[in-house]
Each structure stands twice: as C-alpha cells, then as structure tokens.
Amino acid sequence: MAADAGKRKRPNILVTGTPGTGKTTTSTALAEATNLRHINIGDLVREKNLHDGWDDDLQCHVINEDLVCDELEDAMEEGGNIVDYHGCDFFPERWFDLVVVLQTDNTVLYDRLSKRGYEGAKLSNNIECEIFQVLLEEAKESYPEDIVIPLKSDNIEDITRNVSTITDWIRSWPPAS
Image (cartoon, rainbow, N blue to C red; front, side):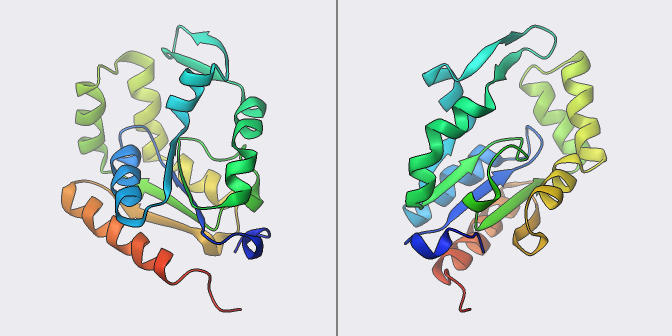
C-alpha cells in the first residue's frame, strides 16, 4: 500500500502497458464501474501542453514528466484516480495503491497497432517492448512488487474479467493492516 494511502478515502490505480494493450478501454470501463476518475495521460499532455515538442521519428509528443507530475499532484493526494499511461517509472511511488500491467499476445498487438497506423520503428519498438516485458519490469523496479499485477488483455472477455478483478480489489480497499 502506498505511504499516503492512509490519508486517502479512495485508492489510486495505475493502468500501464505497451500501446495497444487496452489501457484506455480498461480504464474507461473501470471508471464507469467504480466512479473513480479516469486520467488519460496522453490526453492530459495534449490538452494542457505538458510536453516539450514533437518527436518526428516516433510520431508523438515528448512529454515533460515534471509538468505532468505537478499537474496531477493534488488529484493524486485526494485519491480516487485511474491513471492510464504506457510508462510508469516517473510517477512518485507514493501515488499508487495498485499498478496493473496489461499484456497482450504479440500477434494480437501487432494487428491492433497496425490498424492504428503504426509502422516502421514505432511498430517494431512497441512489439519488442511487449516481447521483452519492458513495462512489467519497469513497474516491478518502480513500485513494491506486491502492488504490481500483470493481467492478460487479448480480447473483450479478458478486459471484462480484468475490470471485474480490479473492481473487487477496489471494494476491499484499504487492506486491513
């Protein structure tokens, strides 16, 4: 459990994983099921200009991690958030009570990313990230291992099951100490 969790009335959850693993779909469904606030970091960065420009090679904004953390600090202290982002190592450890790492079969992921228009280095980098479980390792290095859970996210049945699993966890939060 996060160090600040005792002050919060509702938990904070990070949903992370390689692009295309279902973070936003899962986070949206989870927010609807639990009335927690869904914060999509990519949208937040675009809406509030929390970036340092555009990366032409990867076709994405270069996020300014300090600006993102400053923007989120009050909401995270309050609790009741589902943060949806493909990275996790720059968020303060104290913010999260549960870190969910979504994982998708490489052939499923390849098809999803191709349909999004990913190609070249952007496509191959993301597939390699999933093959080598980069996000799971990053989460385990950044947060206490007992709050990091990998969940399979290949299809709608997996997403439905994951939302149910996380909803059950939220209902039992905070854990008895």
